[in-house]
Length: 403
Ligand code: SAJ
Image (cartoon, rainbow, N blue to C red; front, side, top):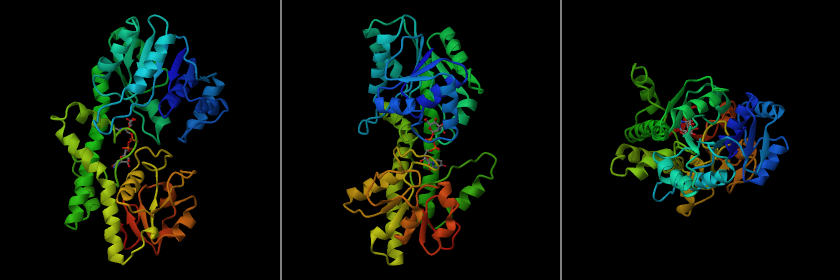
C-alpha cells in the first residue's frame, strides 16, 4: 500500500492516478476539513479530468484519512514555501511530514519526496532529521513532480519523470511504482541531481518569460510591436521566445528560481535579474493603467476593472497571481478602488470583486485583461466601446492598448 501524504494540487492527483491504476492507496492530510470533503465524494479544486479520475479511484477503493499509515511506501507531497526575505526554501513542512511518517514507518520503508526542494535540501534538512530519529534504515527518494495546472491529468500520464535515489535498486523499485500509470520515460539518478533538475526546469521557463517581458518593456519604450517582433523571430529555426504578460504567478516558476538565488547569490545573476523583471511586471501594468487613464482623461480609478484573479488561464488557482500582486502594490501606494472579476473565483477574496461578467463590465470604462480565460476570449464583443488594456494580445478590437 502507498500512503500519499499531503492531498493538495500534486498529492491528490498522484494518489488518484496510482489508485485508478491498481495500486492500493491511502491519502493522508492533516487538514480534517479537506479529508472530510474528499470522503464526502468531492474534489477540492477544479482540473480537467480530475473528477472522473476521482470516481475511478473511489471505485478502486482509495481511502482518505488524517492518520499516517503503517506501510512500506510513502509519497510526501506537501508545500515547500520560501522565505520572501532570505529567498531560501522553508523546508519546515517537508521535515515535519517526514517526522510524522517516521513515527509510523516500519523498518526499511521507502520515503518518496515529491515536493519541490532546492538542491541539497535532502542532505541539509531531511537526512539530519532521519539520523536524529535513528532511522538510517529508511530509504530516501526524491521524485519531483512536473505536471502543469490546467493539464495535470494528461501530463501525469504522459510526462517523463525523474527519480533520485541513494540506492539504484530502490530507484528501480520506485520507477516500477510510477510506471503503473506513467507512460513517459522515467530516469533514475541521484537525489541531488533530481533536486537540481526540477528547479532548473522552472528556472529555464522563468528566465525565458523574463526575456519576453524585458522585450515588451523595450518595445513599449521605443514604440515597437513586441508581438509582431516575437512572431517573426520565432520563425527562425533556433529561436523560440515566450510571451510577455502581466507577471508570473503559480507556486513554481515564481518561487523555485529564488531557491538558486538564495543558495548561490553571487553566482545566480541572470536568474536574479530575471526574477526581478517578472516580479516588476504587475507594477509595470499599473503604470500602463495610469498612462492610459491620463491619455483618455480618466480620473476615477474605480472605473478601471481587472479581468482575472488567477495566476493563469482556465484554472482556479490564485497563488502568487499577478492580479493579487498588482492590487497589493496599489494598496501600498495608498490607492485602491480597482474593480475585479474572475469567473473561476466564486467567493469574495478581494475588495470590489464582482461575480458576473456583465455587471462588472457595466461598472467600468477601462478593462485590463490580466488573465486570458476562455470566457473572455469567447465574449470579446462585450468589450466593444470600452477602453481595453490587453496584457495577453488576445483582443482584436480597434484601439486596444498593450503592455
Ligand atoms: N507565463 C507568461 N508567459 C509565457 C508563459 C507563462 O507570462 O509565455 C506566465 C503564466 O501566465 C503564469 C506563469 O507564467 O503566471 C507560470 O505559468 P506556466 O503555465 O508557465 O507554469 P506553471 O507554474 O503552471 O507550471 C510550471 C511547469 N514548469 C515548466 O513548464 C518548466 C510545470 O511543468 C511544473 O510542474 C510546475 O511549474 C511545478 O509544479 O513546478
